[in-house]
Length: 138
Length: 138
DNA sequence: TGTCGTTGTAATTGATAAAGTTACAACTAA
DNA sequence: TTAGTTGTAACTTTATCAATTACAACGACA
Image (cartoon, rainbow over all chains, first blue to last red; front, top):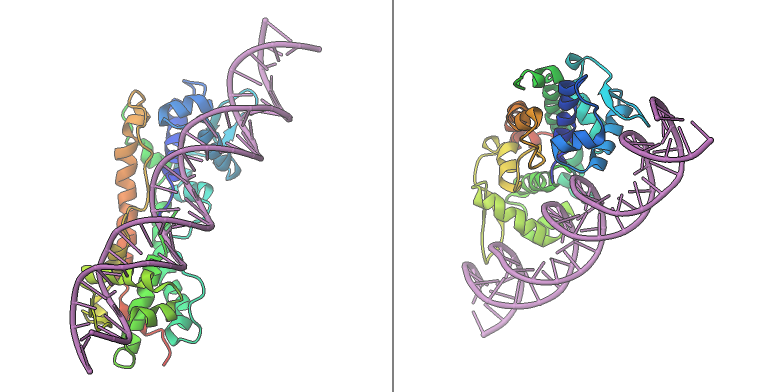
């Protein structure tokens, strides 16, 4: 099992909000049309992005907009906003404490894998919404 | 969703094989006792490690051993051996091709995320079984 | 003020994958 | 031949994602 598609869907949504800002009314229905997912999925993700302070959503009237400059929104922000469990690797529970290896596995491996995790996160942090927008043709 | 616990279980198994080499007969039952999982799970993972050329398993008589020096077995080797789908992130299918953003999402985002993936893999590659063994107390 | 379009959210369903377990054929040494 | 082990297949349980239905709450505007 690996991460859900929420990060890529969320990135898609943010790119749409930026691209169509001022041109279209950015309702969950409209966004769902571009991403091609259910509007409720859009509303859920938009809710998480809102909670993380990345977007503003107008309740009632409808429409979403960015809460920050595109250069200030990184993929790590999006990742942390939408992913419930951000841990890359999982440990099996209850290794045998009688065994010298079983006793040490979690701390030893955990330390090494934490380095892998942070390498990934630093890389995600280096990518901004602005970077992504530069790949969209007018 | 994220990666399964197969990587950590496989690492645990390899550490056990190294640690108990020459001291114990390393059957799937014995290994399962240290990891605290079902012996069949051990046999399945051992089969993948064997296919990847990391271990040797004696059919019939029983017992597993390393096929390479611990300094030549990296966590990336183990990762690729046991994980069926190594892609970190997933895309939603069928974005709307009529939309300029929907049309470009996959190539643009895909290129950036490939960089994240390879950052993770390079880091996994830098960790060897020998490194892990040095954390086990005698 | 009341209607309409929209958001926020809960509940249900179906699909997919992981992990545990049972069962048994195939293999090897003694 | 027998005992112990590996290699697999099949089934079960559990968990999560994503789609969907349903509906209350909200806000602009006729």
